[in-house]
Amino acid sequence: MRLSRKNIFTTVLGFIFLCFVTSCSFVEDVVVTVISSFSTDNWDGETVSKVYNGSTVQYEIPNTVRTVELTATEAVDIFMVKMNVGTTTIPLNSTRYIVSTTGSGQGFGSLFSSRSAEEENPLMEIDDWENVSGITPSGFIRKDYAPARDFVPPALGSSGSGRSARLASVVSEPMKSTITTDLEVGATKDLWVDVPASTAGAIDTFVNSSKYTKRSATLQAKKGNCYIWVLNDNFTDKTASGDKITQTKAVELAEKFDSMYDLIKEVFGEESDEIISVYGFNDISTACDTGTKVNIVVYDIEDDYTTGQYSGVAGYFWPKDYYIATDTPTSRDDVLPLSNEGKYFYVDSGFLNEYPDMIYSTLAHEFQHMINFGQKTMKSMETATKQSDVVSSSTWSNEMMSMVCEDMIQQHLGISAADSPISRLIFFAQGYYNSGLTDWLLGNDVAYSYAGAYAFGAYLARNYGGTSLIKQIATNKYVDQEAITQALKSNKATSGETFESVFKKYPQALVLNKSPKGVTVPTFNKSVNGIGGAMPKINLFEELIIEGKSYSIKPVLLSPKSTSRVNLRPYGFTLHSVGSLNSAGTVNITFSSPVNENEKIYLLVQPKDGN
Image 1 (cartoon, rainbow, N blue to C red):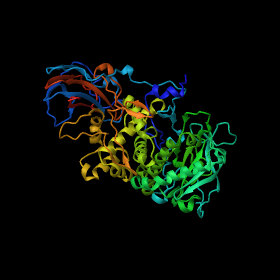
Image 2: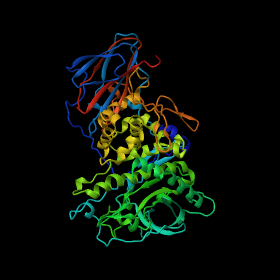
Image 3: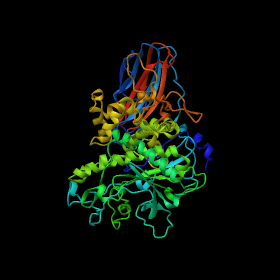
Image 4: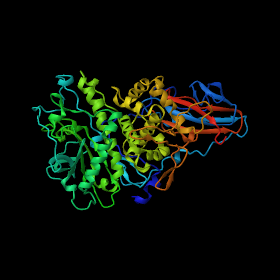
């Protein structure tokens, strides 16, 4: 069944913006550190007393505790959070739940309406969910470009290290040497691009059976920092339509990218000006015919354009182009023979015509990926003495940074929420529990991974330093959780924080909408410095208005009962309503037995909503 474009977004209740990745992290669904086989109602645990007086909003419930006697000095709302701080999934029947609540205060009862597990996955039926990265408010289905997503940097050879290191899969050949000139509009070049599987003579080197051949492209626009190449098959000198763009469109694309180029680099760092060969690292300005310019190639990605198309790949960065091309593949997954040799990323011509703001945001997204590859992978390769010295950002952190880059530059680009990653929060709110922060899902669930990565990045930027924090994450020598920890420590205001500590506080920003007097609670509803403009406030507790329609971006609260348990993904969590006290009083909250030491249980308390 294929739903109409008009009804897709309403059915899905979600939005994810496009991303492309340079590495993937897969996590097995197994349990470690088992205390018992499953969670039970009756067990011999402690009873502890907690007093809420407005000075603390989050209480950790140790595994030894069965009952919490919570006394509040005012009317309060009470929530529960279950968090997995491990690298493996905790199955749902191994997670804790609330067995009973008894209140001595007036009116203790259910807080809001919460949903059971059976109601929690409002996914639509479409023909193929594979590689779907999200749905826009207009109903556009965005997809990953799998070859770029699954690229793994070739291993260093055993014959050398650092700048003299050899790449194990690279065929020996003399280092190319060219004299770079400033190319003029009208210059032509043959570029490797994907083509239909039926194309005669196309090279099949990638495991997903994608095929590639060289196609003629013409330089249709240039600015100080970029070249815009358009495949001749996707260019028209008449009126832009379908998958064919005009030179005017190419010029607009160049101007948009050039306007953001230096601004993005101020925060995320420099893209690499070197290229990798069998002899190590070489100056890209003399080794490549396009020098240090960023090449943006416009064509019909995957050759799938149809009239009214609303599904496909909008753009990608593929690190293969940062390698000198080899003559022949050494294995079926060796894509180095397909290198276009230089700084390249790619955008879809049809979507540039139909969704230009989406493509402009994609430029920022893909440029971050290019910078990340240089800042993390290439810098570590350059000094590596063994393979374990080479680091690459995991998919979740790389995608998080690209979406934060879009978020930060939204105001500068003048694009709406519909074309910015803020709209991802609609999808995040409906299904955040389907993907943990540090794992990366494929197939039907990858859209949740994108949404979760953006939400955490938006939270980090708005609460722990804005561009100064993101700059430290992007440019330090670490990756993933450690990059965040070291960035936090580098700033005096956040020096006492770590990835673990800010992750622990994360649910406060998602659940609490009313801070006690004198207590600072993290929030999305805060404007901080961005790139060329402020990052906008995001109020999770108000409707997000997109193109005249209202969407909820408040994360759903699940029932705390055993019937509403779901799997806890690596560094994932679930949010639950517990109840409210309409006046000062006491409530006894009894929990099931613990199973896995990586599951952390917290109670969150705030002054009662409306007081």
